[in-house]
Length: 97
Image 1: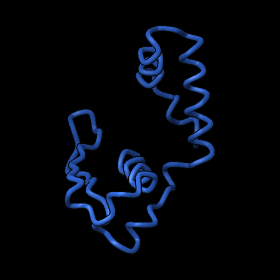
Image 2 (image 1 turned 45 degrees about the horizontal axis):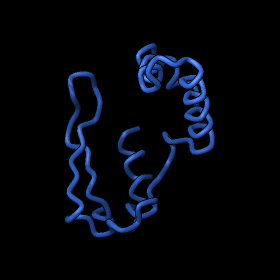
Image 3 (image 1 turned 120 degrees about the vertical axis):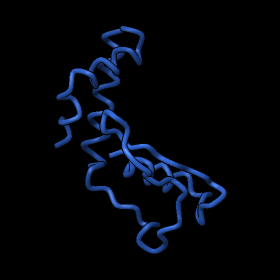
């Protein structure tokens, strides 16, 4: 569900901090994030490059921190397809979700 990410007080606080406590700007940022999540459905995204080449990207999840967040490793020199910024950003979103 697109609004799940808003169910955590810590997430709402991060939006507020990102806008230096400006509630109006934080609300705009939350709206934009919600819209993006609704349109892109990140939990169900798939990477078209990974299907054909598992080594297409250099971003890999190597573990989890104490709060359960993914720890990523990246070395773009090792990526077979490091020049397509759009696909690499999509792959990173998938890793972070």
